[in-house]
Amino acid sequence: MLQYVATLVGGLAGLQQTYIGAPESIASRVSAYVTLGDLTPSPHATQVAFREPQIVVAFAYRVAGAEQSAELMIADLVDELTAAVYADRSLGGTSQNAVLDMSKNAQPVYMAVAGAEFRIYYVLITGLQTTSTP
Image 1 (cartoon, rainbow, N blue to C red):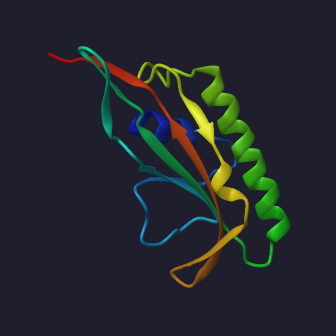
Image 2: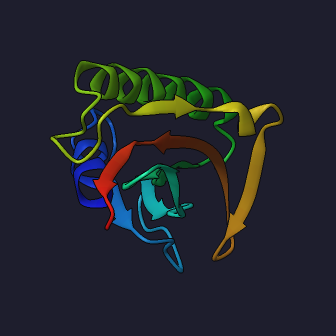
């Protein structure tokens, strides 16, 4: 799922750079980084285990006094990612039913990264994978 989502995010219009993993510094004005979230498997029935892997997408916009531009660009990126995920909820066959969660964004997040201020917006993509167990 991680690689598929990173490829999907990397193709979004207006995005200048995509990282897998949290970068130490962000070189471009409009970037995203894709990281792993929870991967805990759990048994759900006899001989069946579920795993709901989470992939975290963080959109980062170097603000530099352009707060309105940051919000508008992030809104466009979120809309485009939402449409792409719901167009293929299997995420290229890596999940059975992907869903999105953006509830962590109730308060705007501004973060200093290597001396520059970024507006960060988090999208949590949760998949579903099942497997047979002995």
